[in-house]
Image 1 (cartoon, rainbow, N blue to C red):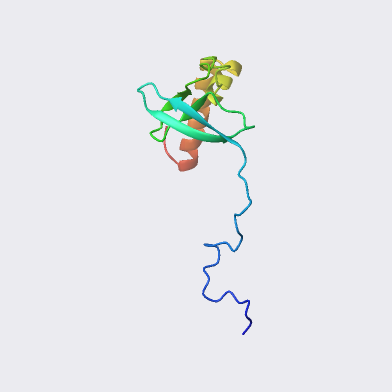
Image 2 (image 1 turned 90 degrees about the vertical axis):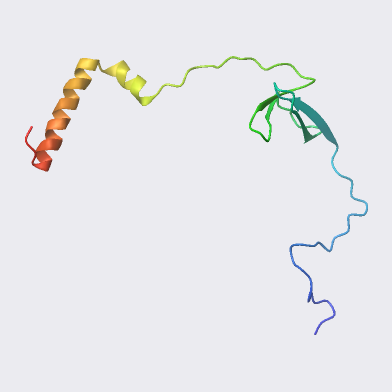
Length: 113
């Protein structure tokens, strides 16, 4: 058997590369705080764009301690399918269409209306 075999090694769990001479990328540690005082520390790369808010492990929104509070502009409200339908049809038209479709359904099932 070859002297270079990997017999007895746990492949994937250990690396044969040395970390000597390797310098990690510059980092920054950013502190966030929730409304109830919970502190959250997150490490980012030095050149990364740091967000104004972060979600804590408890699911609460935390604001950056040394940053500005983000704008509360919710933007455009989400339009649902129902909202768009009401833009095209009146309630009377929708009720009429509903009754027609309901009659078709009952007829296909052989039910008396």
